[in-house]
Image (cartoon, rainbow, N blue to C red; front, side, top):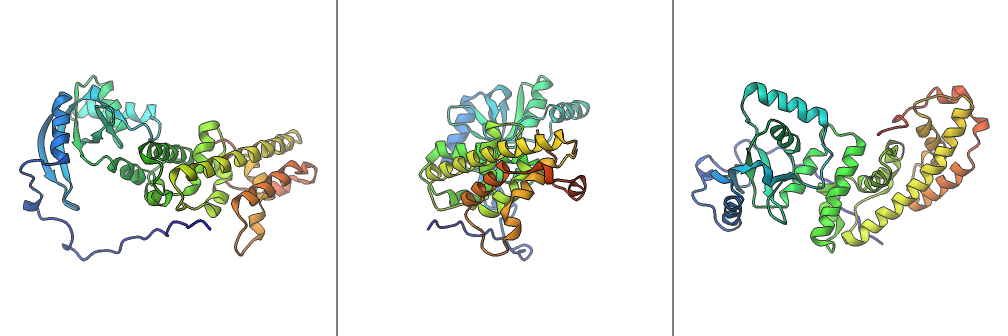
Length: 320
């Protein structure tokens, strides 16, 4: 039997003034080890370290640096650029005439730097024609995944969160695919988001909101290697997309009968979902999806009345 990942634990509130470092203890006289190597990489790239310190919570070294802007790229596994957001941000920076919010950066595997949380600031500065950008450069590359994990709790929609998670997952596969999936539960947030991410990779306008509650209830991170676990997610994604094809046929038939609602997909999915009648331990996900596929293929639209849709809710049919 596959071992499931342990449940998430929220840290207790600490007693004031009992954790971290005092201001004098955060002084870093001279970078050493990985920090020294990172400082050397900054210099070789044409940048300069203008200061260094130990961050006050964990004491990890940080290099406050100015980097040539053309040496910095967003990590390849984060959410897509918002055209509106970066243009608005450029307007604000231009009005103040100051760039006051340094991006976070790590050294990239093939040279240059990646920023896991500064994509829009980076693009805004490029829009303004800036030659350099201020950055807090960290020697620890793994911090990129941790920062993205924190960002997934912000104002992303389901599609953005899912695509970000699957990109992190593929980045982890490239690093070392033999590590257990459960080790990265913090970075990936929900196992369901990995499966939905695969779906969105294949069909960008996929309506994942209708299937998210089912996947979230039945999928968990396991002790399998990333290499093995991704195959399970891809298998589940293929089953979900097959189900979606059958649901789409039923939705089309309902529309042809004149039934109109922004929640038709969610309505059909709810009708074929056996979990709504199961209060105890649910069946495995693959069994549930097979049952839903069979029910969706036999969905009788003739029995659906307009009043049946009155209480329908859930995400709209299109999430693109």
